[in-house]
Length: 425
Ligand code: LLP
Image 1 (cartoon, helix red, strand yellow):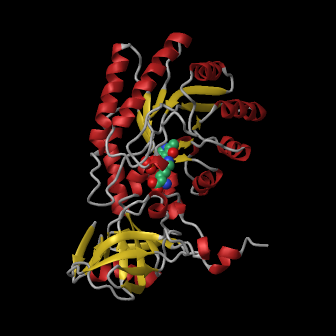
Image 2 (image 1 turned 180 degrees about the horizontal axis):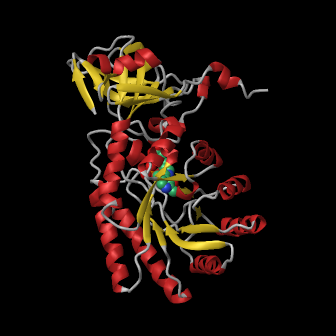
Image 3 (image 1 turned 45 degrees about the horizontal axis):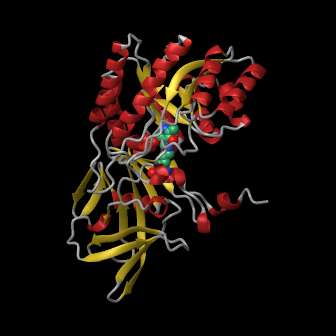
């Protein structure tokens, strides 16, 4: 995906500085080849290897019409969590029968929008949502497929902010017999919802599958209890997302095939030993599909030297286009695209443009002597960068460009000042 010619960094066959020049900075850049490579890995590690499976893209990681169209073409599903994400899918003509709807507080408006579009399934997050959805289904004389998101009471080895399977979590139905089983029974007996099975999502940026394996044990018990108590065999199980990627040399996520293998093996052997038909299995990764496929470009501006302390290089973006360092202490690797293989003799802290002391994108980055106008390239920024962008300090949301071998295409225009204030009355 990357190479260096004449000290210049290339993404696929395009010089990174030529993109900065044509589209301006800050800029989000994606390699379409890399996205497709990730989709192909999901096909070989999961879809093609195990029958009766599907994979959805958790579109919160990078929700754009471009992604919807690409995923549609590649045969993937879409996992949405809001009316806005669903609207993006609808406007991209994404097939309704490949959409699932997650989220802990879907509004009436959002549920109705999803029912009207005829999406495939809802991942019900709590009891009140189930009863509410049933009411809306009756009003509209439609039937909805539902999975229950279970809180499996496991903690994941990741940042606390993105660990989602613990007992005290805002997500999912608690593992409490008095809550869970009446709800399962209600869904099984309902005339307006069709109960498909269970779902969990235990956390994000996970390097191995131990947490998923612990959560799976909880689901297996539920599958068995549901069979024994209600004589009902679930048809579907969704193991969520969370597969980690490489941000820096300190990250060593295991290969997807290794992540998935023990989960599918455990599920298969469990079902065989209990003479239960193995449910259809789905996953919903976000970061894994787009994270490493994206880079961000910035222009270096002011350079401030504090003698005997450190040097700051300021860039023309920051926590508005990548909030992850400020929010989670996320670490990134970067280099200066126009000095890609020159000797590194300076240690920098890269500071964003926002009026916020935590707006430091990278601490202690080693680079060749930096100058105003240099193009800084930050790697592995394809997930949760553009999708979490904001207008703090009224900075504009950057443009997004996709590189396809030696070509490139603008898929999102840079926000204009007028667009920023057009809703203000
Ligand atoms: N499914 C559900 C129900 C989720 O909540 C999430 C992510 C995913 C799937 C996809 O997870 P992934 O495969 O991308 O790890 N903003 C944070 C990540 C928050 C993840 C929220 N849920 C970050 O920048 O690290």
